[in-house]
Image (cartoon, rainbow, N blue to C red):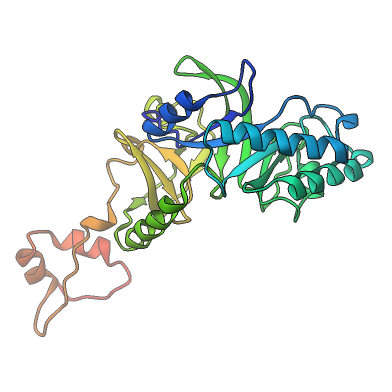
Length: 297
């Protein structure tokens, strides 16, 4: 999964066929993937959501998180896994208020439709919206967006999600401080990539490599590089936030990495011809890079 360009993996807490243990948590992290915890046993009908159930679920989630050594301060997501209506909102809000009041040491994440996410806005710490039952709407404050279900990648059945903001994944407190230092350094060193024409936008590196399942386009412009996998590049307009995977071969003939541009300060009596000769380039190349400047040949 890591080699295909995935960054995060969301898995279930508990003791069921779909839950993970310490061994799996270590395997995920050793592979360089970031782990996100979910607590869900049912939560797929309106009558499930009561104050008592919220208290019970929060206590059980804390026990299960401790059993796999989930770091304190990270998120546990609780689901509303059905098409909630306005008639369900009051009970859902009461449930999540009970969860948050009971949950100690961990942050509250909510998974649900557009209606659910908006109903509990301000209660939770993290928001994970599914496209299901959302009727094409996407909230602008969410941390994750589930946009496809029941697909197979590398022989594994998964649901695809886009990460909009840091989603409360596992990370030790001491590592958080180290990450802050690392990010501060990266703001100086961050790579950029120039897209000179519209190219395909893909969900993962494998799709980009095979040029299939295109989800849209990446328009002409300069982008930050969020991630790389082989020759594939994840480009983004917002530094540190995942964007779209592209295949540089679609942009190869005319692409220019911003880091390769060389600047020359013009001196008295220099001409474009003399500069081109000195910099071992051509007059046409200099004029192309400086279209708005009137210069003497």
